[in-house]
Length: 124
Image 1 (cartoon, rainbow, N blue to C red):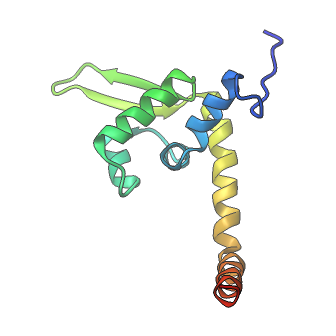
Image 2: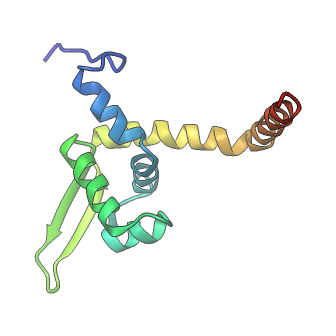
């Protein structure tokens, strides 16, 4: 392979993959799948607010990128399991680290937002 991507190059395919992994829904789905294999309905419950259509599109994009594995189990009715690939696990752990940092620093982040908003009101 030997090819290295450049997400800052708008023509590089790495940008599209980064968009899938770091999108609003993509990052939340990856963050939940790092906990373990889930079925579609389980993922939908684990990520409140995501529609069936958006979850399906997100999973397809992540599967195409090699981050998620979709496995259909031959039972009646069929069960479809979603799990992270090794690459998916690597990126999901990075995302969970970012989420943890945000959660840990939430008071400071909210204070910064309030200070920004107060400055904006004063300057209007």
